[in-house]
Image 1 (tube, rainbow, N blue to C red):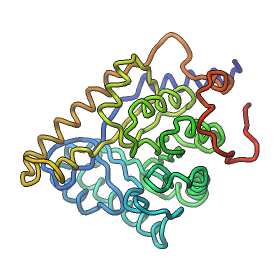
Image 2 (cartoon, rainbow, N blue to C red):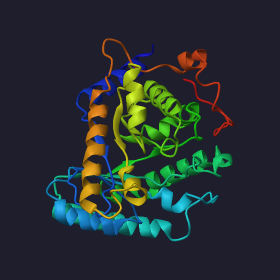
Image 3 (tube, rainbow, N blue to C red):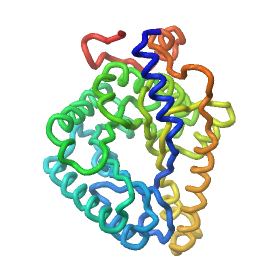
Length: 313
């Protein structure tokens, strides 16, 4: 193993040893005290309501790009005109509210990404990967130095094809390693628990950065635990599944207090499962590209190259 690769492993493992895993949610007008919060450019009213009441509790905020509002049910490849202006103005408001009500809380912002995992968007892969990286490069060139908070670029891929995000990481490793944190963007709409678990295991073995995984199920975390999976660089997850209990199930429809109890119960379970997933010690945890290729795990998921030449060094 090359010295530079070994030093990457040591640095990554050191970051893991200092890292506290976090579970985030979006409390939509729910009187429940949870410290790790998600908001987006289309949800500032709910965030404002929450932080004004529970700002003393908030420890960490993720400002998401709002892909569900923009892309769900639509085949568009890009954000609509005016989106970035809205994104920046709402991010500035989130920062003002954070400074006033939660000055000790960290703020992470997700660089806009383009998903292909919603129904009807599957054929947009791998163009969605290219478009996502275009936004990352744009932010690196023009915006990051003047924006508040810590940037978090998204590693995109295809729905239910775990190897697709590994190929995205390999081909754009030099770009993603400009950042302290990254995120996995193609798992939030999947219900195939075994594939979600496989993607987390694969990505954890190839990345050099702590990462956030969007929309992870309690079932996926239990699946990983039952099979003794080791995830060393999984930093955080988010889930707003309690919200659908409010929309569709009794007794939550007409009781915000009952919904608050559901939120706290669901998120406490997620946090407990997340804390129990181990990071195996005693050996370097990252796989080389050669090892991944020989394992056969990358055989499915590479539809077309995003760059003309795959850099294997």
